[in-house]
Image 1 (cartoon, rainbow, N blue to C red):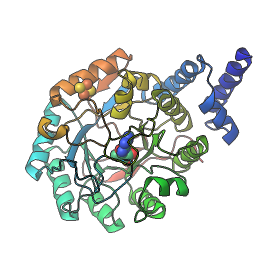
Image 2: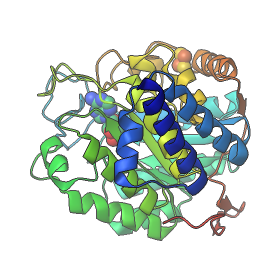
Image 3: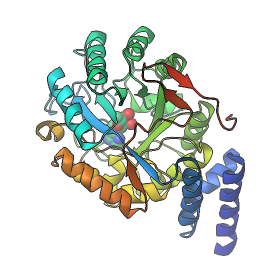
Image 4: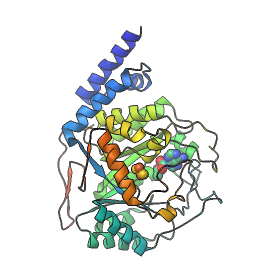
Amino acid sequence: MTETKAGFCMELADKLERDGNLTDEELASVLLCDDPRFGGYLAEKARDVRERVYGKDVYLRGLIEFTNYCKNNCYYCGIRSGNKNAERYRLSEEEILSCSDLGYALGFRTFVLQGGEDPYDTDERIVSIVRGIKERHPDTAVTLSVGERERESYQKFYDAGADRYLLRHETADKDHYGMLHPENMSYERRMNCLRDLKEIGFQVGRGMMVGSPGQTTEHLIKDLRFLKAFASEMVGIGPFIPHHDTQYANAPPGTAEMTLRLLSVIRLLLPEVLLPATTALGTVDALGREKGFAAGANVAMPNLSPVGVRGKYLLYDNKICTGDEAAECIRCMSMRVAGAGYAVVQSRGDHIRYRKGEAGAGTVLPAASPEA
Ligand code: 5AD
Ligand code: FES
């Protein structure tokens, strides 16, 4: 019986690697297969594919969490506006630029500016920060993760030199989106933002939490279809982890096992994708990030924020790496990457279809293989 089940799922994994796609029913079987041998088999397939495209390289992103003020009230998030217990902070432009100087000296060639949707962050402020980093470190990529904005704002950020944008779609199911967010947030607006970002020319990161409240296998399949349909350049996934000051404080967390399985499936669906082994994965499992690299992930995002504020950017409980100096964090991460059999490289680590010249002009190369 077990033989049959494992054999059946392994054949599906072979098909996924070969065709880059499966039917919904087949995807469900891959996600739900509980044979203990199957996860390892799937991960091996995903590793083969990532090594074919990106070799053994792991790209580093220096994460600068520059504000935890947020006007949104997403029900799952520890820094939502309704959480009066969150201790708020905002880094000055000088502080952000000195994080980038430190990061550059440590070898980072991508900086991710991540923050809540802070009304203090006018377009002009974001533009000035992007320009500041690019002037000091022209050979770096700047990724923004500052939420939903008008198309004109995104265009200004791109024109200022920003290369990439992370905006997780959170869920590709409208009703599920409504369950996770208050009424003043809209699924349509999220989708419009993602479309605008792509049309402007950013390398765009989408993604979702694994095991978020109310999430079903059908939702995950919709997410996978969505990620594939938009040929996402980057996909950020991590387990949902409850935060004590939210209405989902007692909801069960997502598992490392399901996150790893999804990482592998995403690698097989989108062979060229940039896929981080996230901090949330390292939080639910002490070896989660190593396992993530072994399951198809090829990006790591060590924290570059000043130690004084790290413990305040708390989207969920028990977050790791909140007490470590940047230099310590990069050393630790490099060891973890090496432990998984990979090597950290000092490079911008662009998506393989994107190349940006020194003058900042973006060139999108044609896809190596057609993606539905
Ligand atoms: N657990 C895990 N991930 C979370 N995020 C927000 N809250 C949580 C949580 N409780 C994720 C969201 C968001 C990203 C910045 O962090 O997916 O897009
Ligand atoms: Fe941050 Fe280990 S990766 S301390």
